[in-house]
Amino acid sequence: MKRMGMALGLASFVVVVGAALLFFGGILPFAFSRHNGMVSGTVWVANEAGNSITAIDASTNRVLTTLYGIKGPHNLQAAPDGKSVWVVSGHDGLVVRIDAATYQVHGIVPTGKEPAHVILTPDGKTAYTTNGGDNTVTAIDVGTMKVVATIPVGTSPHGLRPSPDGRWLYVANAKDTKLSVIDIATQTNAADIAVGAKPVQVAFSPDGKSVYVSLNGENAVGKVDVASRRLVGKVTVGSGPIQVFVTPDNKDILAANQGTRENPGTTLSIIDAATFTLVKTLQTGKGAHGVVADPSGKQAYVTNIYGNDLAVIDLATRQVVKSIPTGKAPNGVSFSSFTVAAPRVQIHLSLPEKPRPMPAMTMP
Image (cartoon, rainbow, N blue to C red; front, top):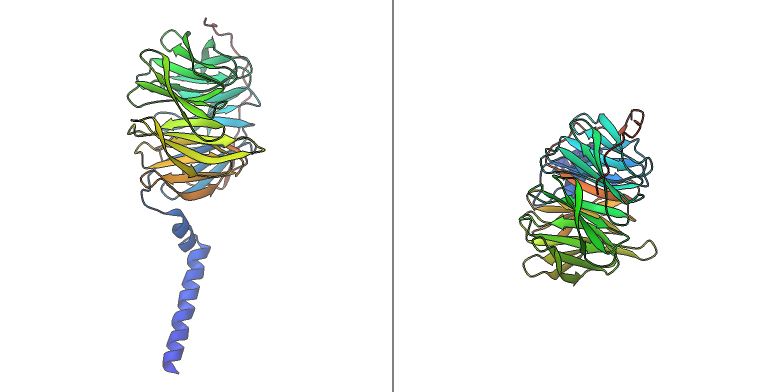
């Protein structure tokens, strides 16, 4: 009887402690959140249909907070120092700068029509948005938060990224067959490169020698030689590739395959950069759209636009290790090594009145 009583007491203790840990986010969150290769930093996700931004702690794979107040946020980008996050509103035709430490809005700037993506130069001094509604790129001085140039490019510019040396900006024109090359020093369109049907996003190799482009109309990824500005190869990937990213070690090229709403793609294609061949097709979720890797190259993150979640991928094992719920229709994703402020369930951003667009010099 005494042993039975002790056993029952121990069982009761285990149940109580287990329930307490479960209630306070102990056992289950750790069991399902932690895995090998965890990294520090913040993953930012733009939820276009949810009119929200999700901030996720990369060290725990837990949602820190959800920001509301920006309509139709298609894409976002953490600044090089990670201290601010820039978000485009396709609905209102503007870009919003958010302080990552306080979640406060530090300014808004009008862009062209229907802005799609935003990036910053490696030195963090200039921000650029693609404006799909008027076939331009807007250049913004980060110090003054003023538009300094409006640059004509191809038809329906979408994704864009700067070269590692900060000299060039490559723009993918989604309703075209070419990339536009912007000279950052002169803020002019210096060249166009024929690549194929419906280029949606670009990604530089870390050494700056190659640019890779997702060709949504061909279910392929193209490779451009930067020195000659010529397409030198293509590799077939999944259905409807959208975003593309190169891992920091220049080993893998990652392409997220969204497909269509009627026939969603569900995969991430992994291409060996050295041989430019497909080496892995990984199931990530419904409507794989955005993709980014952390600076250490340990993990990658894929937004699943039709699944309303974010897939976390261990790049060493090339396996999905976590699926994190986001807002509705997650699109753009960006990684920052900066750890954001303490978690808060929801924050409603207070946007200042939209300033009137100041006339900026239109570059040829």
